[in-house]
Length: 151
Picture 1 (cartoon, rainbow, N blue to C red):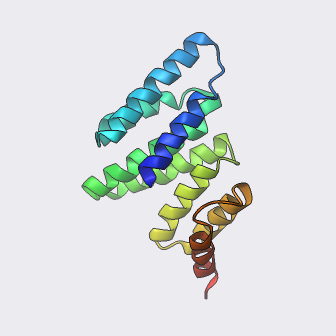
Picture 2 (cartoon, helix red, strand yellow):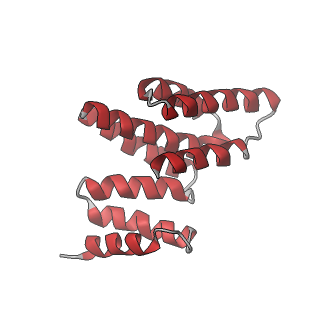
């Protein structure tokens, strides 16, 4: 499911480029390269490419979210805490670029939840449901929100 959301992120990005032909072309190049590397499980290379893609403000939120996913899978490979920290930071930067970008809320909430910060995760899941009331995982997100409210 995470890879599906990553592809969705790129589709949303590529539809929203608007800095002129040269910048749009460069953004597309880095995003497409990063997505291809991500799909090939070449997470280090994807991180490099997506780090360049985030320089284009109109699509920075989606690019940072995809970068966060690359950090997540790199963390799963190496289990080094620094990659988890980078993942969280990428999602936070995505939300700084666009506070209504629901995919960043979803992925940040998921990471926080499984890292044990269920209360903070619940805030992001609530925001996902505000922005996407028909989200297909609504019931599961509501359960996770409730878990964060337990004493």
